[in-house]
Amino acid sequence: MTDYIYEIEMKVRDYECDLQHIVNNANYQHYMEHARHEFLESVGANFAELSQKGINAMVSRVEIDYKLSLTSGDRFVIKLNIAREGIKLVFFEDIYRLADNKLCAHGRIESICVKEGRLTRGELFNELFQQYL
Image 1 (cartoon, rainbow, N blue to C red):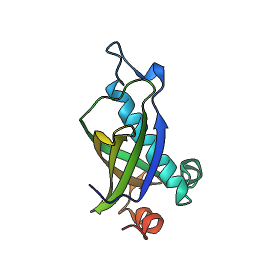
Image 2 (cartoon, helix red, strand yellow):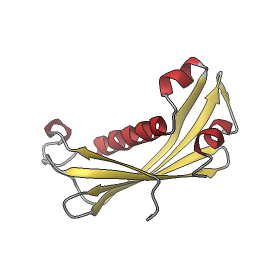
Image 3 (cartoon, rainbow, N blue to C red):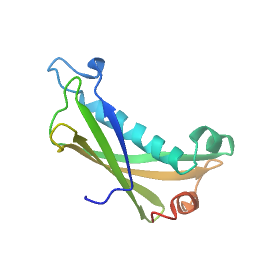
Image 4 (tube, rainbow, N blue to C red):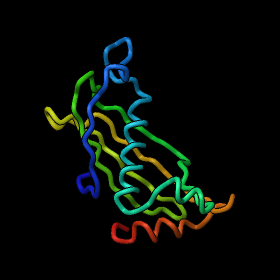
């Protein structure tokens, strides 16, 4: 993917690395989640406020392809784009190491919207992300 609508820079912290001195695979999902939350805030959405209204955007599926390991101290950027697929909002997230701009991980995260305990058609996604969809 070459077109992105949002990006955020981060740095690998020592405790995110495993015995092999590389970032543990689970942390890539944490990085991507952080990027999604920051993106939501950038469009004026807040998870806590939505939840108080009985609206919950939730992950329904995660796929991550690992390409190149990050190590302690590496600076990286997470770039994302979104698309609608039926009732789902799909986030496409790529993590690049800043030192050489190499792709480290590619994620596809599907999310759904539940209102007052019931699955919706994703109207909230259309409302929040109309300029990107």
